Image 1 (cartoon, one colour):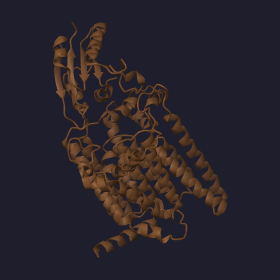
Image 2 (tube, helix red, strand yellow):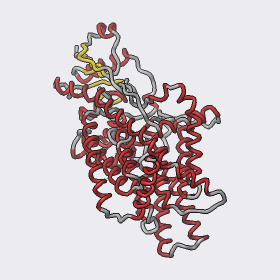
Image 3 (cartoon, helix red, strand yellow):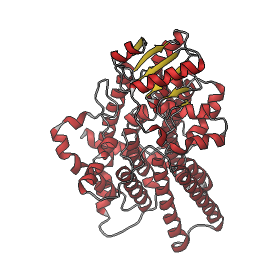
Image 4 (cartoon, one colour):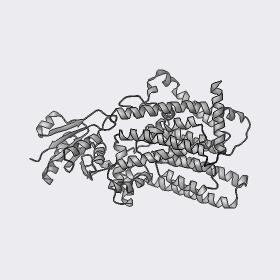
Length: 527
C-alpha cells in the first residue's frame, strides 16, 4: 500500500515539474541545498584524492602548450577533442598547481547537480540518489576528467529541449561543445542530432506545424550541430605514428557481442568493492548467480527501454543510436572502463528526462508501451540505490586508501629540496603524475628517449627499455650536464644493478589503488 502511494507521488511530482514555473521557489530551494551538500561532500573527497596520470595528463597538456595551436598539435595522440584542455589553459596560467583543475571540475559537477535538481521532472528522492550516485558523486566529480563537462552539456540540452524550437540555436551551440568533450559524448551528440532532424522533418514537411521564423532558427541550429560533429571527428583522426589503441576489430564474434552487452551492468549497477583496488571493480561480479543472470538482465533492460519509448520516437531514436553506438565503439575500438561505460546510463537518464516532452505517436498495441513506462519509477529508484551505494563506497575507499603515490612522491622531492635536479623517469605515463605535482617543465623519459612533461602516445615510446638501459641513459646525461641525476621508477631496481652502478635508494612509495603508480627514487651521483 505504501509503495503504491509512493509511486503515485512520483507521478504527481513528475507532472508538477512539467507544469511548474521555472522560477518556482520550492524547486530552486531544493536545488540550492542539495547542491551545497553535494559540493561539501565532494570537496572533502577531492581533498583526499591523489590525482592519477590521466587527470594530470590533461593538466600538463594545457600547462605546457605554448599556444592554442600548439595545444591542438600536442593533442593529436589523445583520442579526445580539446574542449576540456582549452578550459584548463587559462587556469594553468593563473597557477601551475593542478588543484586549480580540481576546483574547476567540482564547480562543473555542482552545476550539473543544480540544473538536474532544479529542472529534471523527477521526484526529489530520485534527484538526491542521482546526485550522490557513483557517476555524479565520484567518477564525474572527484576524478577530474573531461567527461564531467560532457554530462553538464547533456543536462543543459535536457533543460532546453522542452522549448527546443524557440532555443534551437542555443541547442546547436550546446551540441557543438558537447561533441568536443569526448568521443563518447560525440556519439551521444550524433544520436541527438539525428533524432532532432527526424522530428523536425516530420513536423515541418508532413505536419507543417512549424512557423517560417522557427524553421530558419532550426536549420541554423542543425548547421551548428553538423559543424560540431565534423570538427570533432577531424580532431579524433589519429596520426600515422599513433602508438595507443590503434587496432580495430571488425570481425563479428557472438561471444564478444555478449561480453560487450554485459558492460551495461557496469553502467546501470556500479557497485565497487570496498578495498584499495576499488576503482573499476564490481562487487556483484564475484557472485555466480549474478553472472548467470547478467546477460539476460542486460538484454531485458534494453528491450524494456525500447518498449518504454515506442510512443516517443525522438527519445527512442536517441536511446537506440547512442546505446548501439557506444556499445559498437566498445566492441570495435576500445572496451573502456567504468567512466566510459557511464555514458550508457547518462543516455538512459537523458531520454527519461525528455520523454514526456517528446511528441507522442499512437500505434496499435500502444498500451504495451504504457505498461512498460509504468515500471519506470520503481526501476529507476532501484538502479539509483545501487548508484548511491556505489558512490558512497567509492568516496570512502578513496579517502581511506592512497589512489596514486604521484602526489606523495612529489611532496618528498620538494621536502628534500631536489626538485630542480635533472630527472630520468620510467614508465613515462606513471612518472608524468609526479611531474604534474612538481610543476616541473620536463624530465627525461626513457620511453622515447626524450625530454618532456606530458606523455606523447606515439610509436617512439612503444619499445621496451630495460632497467640497465635506463641507468646508462642517466649516466650519459650526468656526464653531459655535469650534475647528479634523480631516477624515478614505478618499480624497484635489482639489487645487483644498484650495487654495480653505486646508486642510492632515497625512498619508495608502494601500495595504491592505481597499482603501477607507486614509486622508487634513486640517486645517481656524478662520478
